[in-house]
Length: 259
Image 1 (cartoon, rainbow, N blue to C red):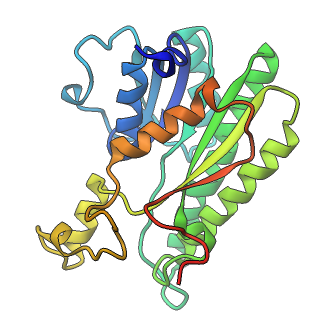
Image 2: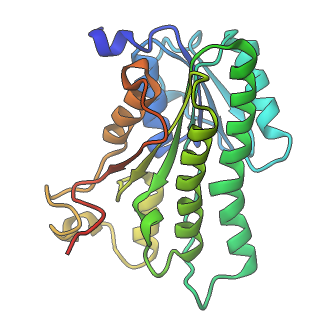
């Protein structure tokens, strides 16, 4: 391990939305750096997607983060399994299509519950545990570049991620001086399983990646989950201290002020 890797060795984290995409990549990167991880998802994690020797470091919890009882149960499991809790990645989310004229109340409520309400109450539970122990803790919220305005067909999602951005700053301000840090990554277009399924279902075809413009992906390809996971691990680790309340744009181009 290099110095960066050693910064996470022996620490314990919760990662939501851990069965695929950015969540799964984050789990694997944390495990590779010697951390312990409680992965939370509604879907089981395929054993083939995890290191063969991860039994002692990793525990998978099937849970719906939008359930009212979930936050305390998740934190309780982490403490029971690892005896400590050093951070949280609020990654679980969804982005169903819907604009100003066709977003139903059902879609709006589902998006807000998963992308904003659930992260707040899970953060609340993790923060409560950290305040009890009096030890440093790092929370990373996975946001989106849509938080600044958003695509027309992502009205509810953009609002939820904008709210998450304000939540991140508010919590960081509220927790100043406690050793508990809260930061956010506003992630750009990423090649996840969910994005692949969406592109295929909306007419993109199996070769949709070949038709991405250089404006959307200046290097020729969009972000990969493993690349985002590297950023997540940095912000979870003591290497990013003492920064708190920061919103980092994880994209290939300036998100704000781009012509």
